[in-house]
Image (cartoon, rainbow, N blue to C red):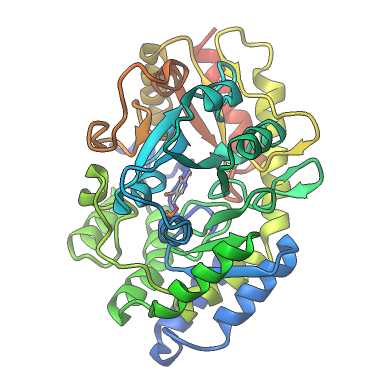
Length: 424
Ligand SMILES: Cc1ncc(COP(=O)(O)O)c(C=O)c1O
């Protein structure tokens, strides 16, 4: 029990981008409830994002999933219309399709990557297909030229899912600016975080007009929800500091969960395709203020992630027991996480336990199945077993390594060492 009491644990997704000034800002905002719903931060955040991406139309929502819902709604889908989306994803990216009574059709990933395989996109297109959601998993750019070519040939809308890839590039173009529309996520473990939040980026006039009308009908979330989001970085700042100290951090996290001092990132109903408790809402001003503070750090965070990824690459490239994912030529990957695939799920699970004993808390993303988080019903999300064999195999064998500003170069070297010792 006392072995690790003074060991600094390595985490992957406990408030990974919240620094001291983010926590102080959350605390200040918590004490200023008049700033929670409206104020100048929302407009400032919106214009700063538009400037960063070099686009005109951006709409800020309470989450990435609701931003995706707004985009799909703006496509005027009919019941039974099909939307292509890759397997090896999160239920939050699939559910908005179901809320509109459309059908997700899953595209396999490439055998040596984490993104959709253009050849399989072609195979899965039917007369009912209306759009392709292109996920840039973990910040690795998808094969945009080929996907855009297929979309043009079949007259399909392209929606980029940039939830993992904000700041990444494809042939000098910012990810999120290549298709008809895109979503960004500022969720708690994303590239930058406003605890919860998302943006719809639109490059298509008709979609922008429809989305504008929907956006105007949305309101900010209730005050209680905003307070729960503001409490998150404060609570988890304390949890991180005291995680191993007589279990204090773990007890604090559990107490906060029981008392509902924060909201879960995915609720129970969503694992069965249902909606989150919060209807699509505009991003509250207080969370936009947190987002603005993080946007200032975006380039620094991404440079750090790239350096950490280089340490993993250099340390693991000679290890024949692990498979690493390569970035496409002429792309800039921003590495939300660094994925590593082992030979089989047994070695992968054993390694997670081995690392945990050393206070290195690694994770699996999305889950040991093709749609996460664990407990997601593949049936309710219309996934047909065997339809995406590479994604199924990848989900069974892979884990993700941390790259966030919390991860020091020494941490990365320690993880490399653990993998090379365990999987020789
Ligand atoms: C790939 C992907 N797309 C979309 C989302 C939805 O983002 P948000 O959590 O902001 O709703 C997530 C995260 O949950 C995700 O991992």
